[in-house]
Image 1 (cartoon, one colour):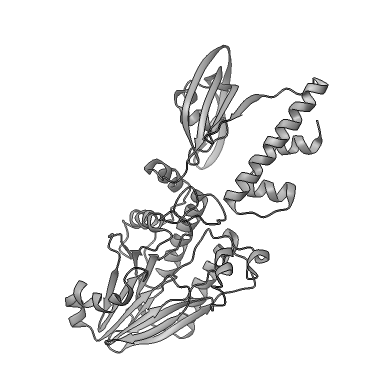
Image 2 (cartoon, rainbow, N blue to C red):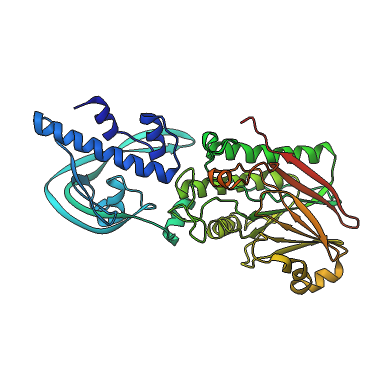
Length: 440
């Protein structure tokens, strides 16, 4: 068989990685899956033709691609009885991720031969690893499998989210002793869009992918905290809103909450896991300075994934007093600090009504405040206006423009994150800007 064809059939890794390795093309995850499926179908066809001519190639499995996008796989495999007890475990044995595929049908026929193994167990004693062999027996049986699976499209299930959380490392939560401060630090990193894919050749702008997003996010948080230290600010409380399109997609099919298809950098669970990892990392940096209040504010891209992330943060920090997480499901959120009242919304639905909602929704806090602001996201650019004594701010974003923004001409906005320092009595005292680090 042609070496290239064999390499394609035996390739490991994600569709994006394989397309880059064999064809030198960086594609969005969904497009990469489609192109790689075509490449493997062609390779399989060529291999089968060569086998017919030479009589030397034998396929280990038979795969049928059905019209409804499902696949039927026939294969003999070795499994324990426990592994053969559920379609989910069989899917894993055949290389199908249960987060991306669901079983339609599964027929199992137990074969006539088995393999018995004596297992080694590793134990530790007084911190020293010792290896001891026990007469523990495990038997693998031959099973003939006929499995039909189909890709999961737009629906996320509790089980899928449970699997995604299993990949997230929970930090060792420690408590800090805080010095009484005199200011509040607000850090709203809005419209971050982790999972977005921006290719410079398509956008004429900067690159944005999972690696760039992670580096940029961490540099931004550390840059702001370094400036807090540089200005010798005495912080006693930190507000850290999450949501506001922190994630780029919201479904397994790579769409927004409302179903708009997007170009994206990886599968949804990788994006989700990385996003939660970054949020936990940021909270750990912030709470070394002062107690942190996290609040969920929905966006239009990631209403569900951001809420699930907030719930995960809520349970992660439930045992510590230095982090509180507001997971209430209201569209708009508020915080007060002395004479200050700040409201959050994504700012996409309210229109001009936004200027009159604070007085109605939190009248007591309104009456106790002197300085009032709305902090809104969505537009990825800064803008400020004052209406009836309320300052309404649009918050900038550090994300890059993708191909859709480039086509529409939504380019050129200054990429930056802004943090706000509030004095209890005198209102907003300082805005700390962190321009996006573009040399990454």
